[in-house]
Length: 219
Image 1: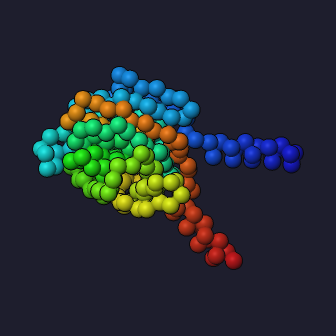
Image 2: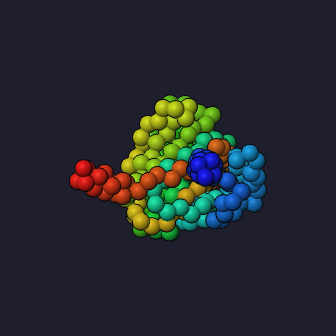
């Protein structure tokens, strides 16, 4: 019985640590050309596509390729991104999306010939923040941590040391479409690559706090 229990725990642990299989995810605005090999996605980003709502430009677009899975609760998601960025606003990265009026997209965006760490947060209308990079980078890791009603966004160049680039609100206790996206608002498309995509479940923070409080009261 003890061996069976231990075996079951090992199997459960292995599933917890496994990377999310890209093959089991689904497309929103599927691009014409893409392939998945060894948990790596390469896609030709569809030209003249983006995610943006209303503010500053006065238009709404919701038509860029997005490969996603549905997650509830709290989690950590990260991916290594690279791209053959060519034209202003070429971009690739992570997206967390509740619906067409509520989403966060974050990653690299190519603006005026420079690489920028970029985040767009949309709640009915979109905002945009960037961190310019001194020089082009071959790749960058982007990580998002959903805790309660906040999403913390980080970047790294080595998957070891992460720096926070944004903390944004996102409705809690609501399923989220989470995955990778690419957009090409002005250009004729480019190739984007996403490697080592993974999602890790995090215990519900409110419940953890409740358990700790009640544990101390019982003692």
